[in-house]
Image (cartoon, rainbow, N blue to C red; front, side):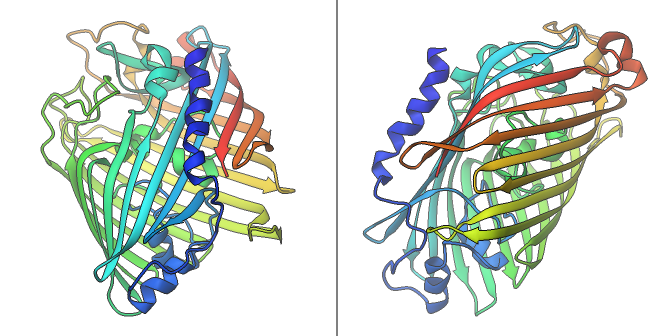
Length: 450
C-alpha cells in the first residue's frame, strides 16, 4: 500500500515548482517569427492542426482534435515556458472468471515539458515518467483476455504489463514555413513513433478509464520505443510523417533503458498521414514495419496498420480560466497486426466516448472487438511450451461503462472516486476456460494535475 500512496506523493512533490502557474496563455518569449509568437501566445486552446502540433501535449508527435482540452499547469521562467501534467489511478479490480484475478494497484504517469523559441523555430523538451514498476506488483495487473509481453520470462495472459519508469525522453523542433506550413522534427532515445492515434493513456476519450484497451498491442503498443527519429510536414489541416525506431518492445526490467534481446538499433519504420478538417475532427492512417517486437517470438516481424477518427466537442458555459463546463470526446479505432512469418492476422476494433457534464462529472463507455490468440489457452504463469505455435483463436467483445466525479483536494490537484463495469463475450474456443460472459469491476480514485 505504501508504494501506491507514493504515486500521490510523487504528484504533490512536483507541484510546488509550478505552484504559481495555472496560466492559460503564453506571454512573449523573446524574439521569434511573428507567426510562431502568435501560435505560442494562443496555447490556452489550439484552433488548427498546426497549433495543436505546437501544443505538444501528448506523447510523440500525435495530436487530438484542436478543440480537445488538456489539463496542465503552465509557468513562464525567463525565455522558457514550463508545463506539467499527469494522472494517477489507485484501483481495485475484481473479476468473475476462474481465470480472472483481484488486485489493488496504481497506473500513473507524469509529464514535465519546457519550450522556447530558438533560431527560426520552437524547441520543446519533454519527458514522461511512470511509477508503475513499483505500483503494479508482479509486473502485471489483472485484465481478462489481455495478452502481450512477458513477466518473469513467461507470457502475460489475462494481464496488462506496467509502463516503463522512462516512458519518454524527447526533443522536438518545429519550424514555420510560411503562414500555413510547419516542418517538424522529433528525436527520442525512448519515445513514441508515428504509429496510430494518440496512445490510450493520453487520449481524452480514454482518460477516465483505468484499464488498458484490449486492442493495445494491435493499436498503440509502440508508444514506448527506443531510438525514435521522426520528421513531419504539416500544411493547413494535413500532416505527413515518417519515423525510424527500434522495433523490439521494452523488456520487463522497467526501471532503466534496458536493451531488447536484439539491441537498440533503428531497424523499423512507419508512415502516418493525419487530416484535421476542423477544430473538432481529426483522423489518421498509419502503417509500420516492426522488427521482432515480442521477446517470446524473436524471429517474427510484424506489419501494423491503424486507422482512426476522433471527434471532440466543448459545450456549455466557460469558467474563469476559459475552460468549458462540458465536453464530449469520442474515438473510433481499427488496428491490425500481420505476422510476416506466417501471414496470420489479428484485428481489433474500438469505439469509446467520454462525456464531461456539469463541470466535474464524467460518464464513459468503451466497446471493443479484439482478435485474440491461442496463448489464452495456456496455463497462467507457465513457460511457453517449446513446440507452441501462436495462432488466432477468435474475437473477444468487451463492453465497459463507468462514472466518476471530480473533487478539488489541493491547489492544482483534482481527485475523482469512480467505478467501471466490464462485461465480456468469449469466442467458443475460450468458453470452457472462461465462460460465456465473464465480467470485471474496477473501483478507483483518480488524481489529476489541473
